[in-house]
Image 1 (cartoon, rainbow, N blue to C red):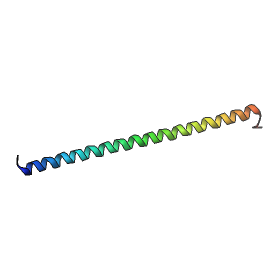
Image 2 (cartoon, one colour):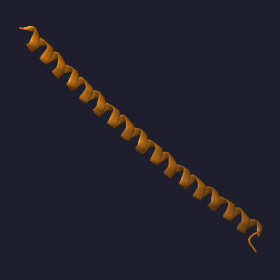
Image 3 (cartoon, rainbow, N blue to C red):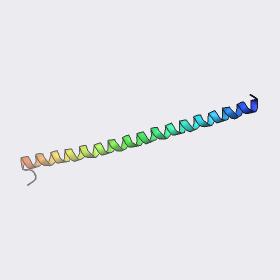
Image 4 (cartoon, rainbow, N blue to C red):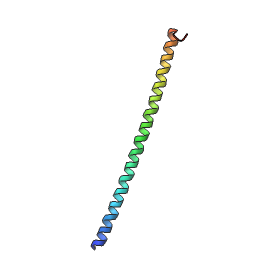
Length: 65
């Protein structure tokens, strides 16, 4: 193999490695994004349940009247 061919192949390998790394970063970013959205949804549900509980207590104790 001549040095030109070797450096071409090294360049190809580097390009592929960078592409793979970029893809992995995108996947990690997407996973983080969807996890964050899940947590936010969970938080909304917890808030709603807490609100329902407060309302139930108010109704039970007659504080809503």
